[in-house]
Length: 640
Image 1 (tube, rainbow, N blue to C red):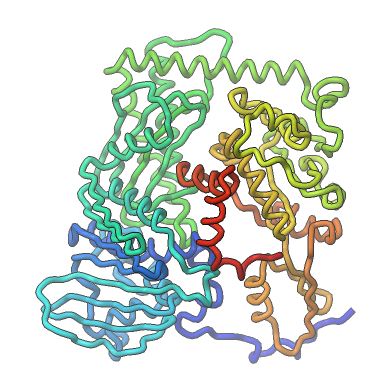
Image 2: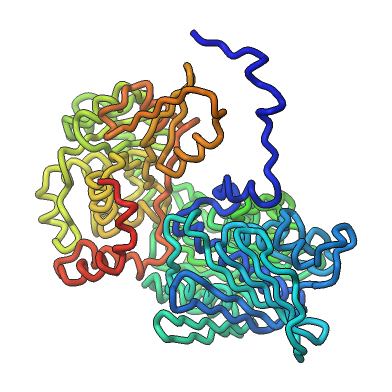
């Protein structure tokens, strides 16, 4: 076995990345990935800077232009304009150049200029610059127009005073770098919807979106704020409200501004969107935890005061929150986000602060709306009884006892030993070969394996009865235990996670798409309740001596190779499918929760997802042809 000596590792092996080179070498650390979501994140970073000017009271209008090429954008505001005078510590550079070329440079680290801001890391604009093939910053300030151009994070021209100008503001043009992103074409619908969300969260902010690719302009202005937003969500989600009056809670003090709107619907899921300083926190955080706790405590207090004690049933927090559709928006001076992409708020003090706003507001609302309160309480009790009935059924028919439920499960299912659904997970794999490897590498106590034989039925345009006549679909439904369609009951789900694990090739992608279409059409609650995931097996193994590293795709492979010393012998092997991996490799890379990568399946826009599945898998082949032709630029990315 080869061993590494001290002489193999010296000062020459230590790399120092200058300027914004670190961002270009590891873009995923700053924008979450180089996929479509990461591409659009560049725009959100620039827009958020303009929104911060609105929060500071210095702008009321933002204009976003998607240019005709679909791959470049301009964001303009009428704020103060980025400072263009020389920076005191970098006397040869203007403040504008420092901000756009230096990580952790900005005016938002203190509350002197921005009391409440979404961009507190000081890396947003510079990251966009680093990952753009071209950026042009135009500043209107001090009676003049100033312009400076950049390329891949470096200035290509000095800051120039162009002409006299009456007014103030900042205009940023940027074109993402095709060397970084797999695709640089923006979605006009994604941009429009995101900007519309912002206009709801920031009541009074005017946003104009000019879509030059379609020749359309949208004026987005929502003076009623998140109340109007909740009405829109209710209509978009096609949920029937249990009460027309919207419950709201608001408070604004020196440390925290809280806005919450809620209503109960006839749905069986809980859906509360959360925002911090106008930024959507997809993973929630302490502000959402505080709102959820406040809701539950308010109802428990209401039940105690009014002596509501239903017999034979215990009401849980899930029963109280079932059917809620709501929005939680907070503004604070020093938010602690989890990661640069700001998916989750971590400020511990916010939980009690938001709870202290929500709980008394809901209690007052319930006491002042007795008839509505009674209707909601009736709904909660019915929900609790349904959960109790489900628990009783589970206890009477043991999930894994011989001679009962297990006998009705598919014979090819390799079930786990655990009787606790909350700790179990199901891997749906492609073919018996991969199923055998996964079975050998799994943790048989909590991990179950269901192999599929070939491609499942396309269920996009057929009725559920016909779908269930397909053996693979029937086995899947029986394994999950929830029923399907109108009979679906997520409380009967036998596993906490369902993970699609397919080969990283065209057939694997096709099977995953067919599976996603089935779940979207007939089991959407699995997606809403965050139970469905896609596993990410590696495509390459890179061996250096006795050490092995794994790459998810070609770009990941190149990143790993670039990080290795140039004098080491490197062996690269490609996995054509899961069946080519041995059990220990599959366990290490894809099955073990400590090392694996899972993509959570989410429905960001139900209408857009509905249209996409209809185009790709529907009966109308002409729509599929148009999609294929319009997306032909992606052909280079296909792995066939």
